[in-house]
Image 1 (cartoon, rainbow, N blue to C red):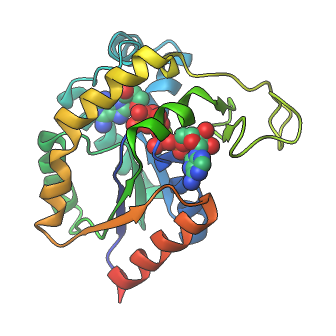
Image 2 (cartoon, rainbow, N blue to C red):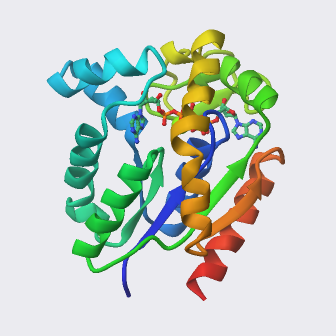
Image 3 (tube, rainbow, N blue to C red):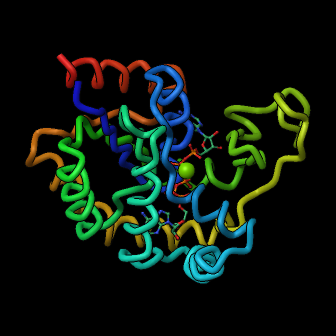
Length: 219
Ligand code: AP5
Ligand code: MG
């Protein structure tokens, strides 16, 4: 069977990361988050991390060529042979085109694009209350709280807030999304790959809707 590539589309805070982790586990695919990859590079103080930081802290996008190269390298590893759940990539029309070309090289194509829709006012509340674990697990002080405040349920590590989750940076990230990423909605809709998902539901209900979309796409 040809590999499965699911592209999670949606604004900052829509729940792409939350859902991508669940899907990857359910479908036994790798979760590829470009945001997480950049943050990992930042933590390891690589050159790529230092470059990305300048953009991320301002809520701007990292240049396409750098991002595409990083994704190509990641998807070429053997753990991605069955495909991947893409979270935060592609994020510009140029990235979408580069991604199509890359998948062509792998004799594959995008399988389905769940587009998680959430209104702007909800996004700000979600991001200002988001607590991250160094492991990448995602919590929310109200909507998905850990058992003990600020402590990861699984490994006990200290949770933290993302540097770019400050309200003014969040607002800019939403603007950048509307300008640079929202055009992908039509791009994937015109290829009949887009499935709109109501992202204001509970995490479990959102997962169910996305799983149904994935099943239909595979049928
Ligand atoms: P990235 O890390 O991808 O951030 P983002 O797209 O802004 O999205 P978020 O991670 O903030 O939100 P999410 O949709 O994953 O929501 P989550 O599941 O956490 O990118 C960061 C930066 O890296 C970019 O600004 C850019 O600089 C750079 N970058 C990354 N990719 C790039 C690319 N391709 N090109 C160029 N630059 C790139 O959920 C949010 C919160 O809500 C959590 O607290 C969660 O618990 C809660 N929640 C989730 N679902 C629900 C629900 N159904 N109900 C209630 N609460 C919920
Ligand atoms: Mg995320």
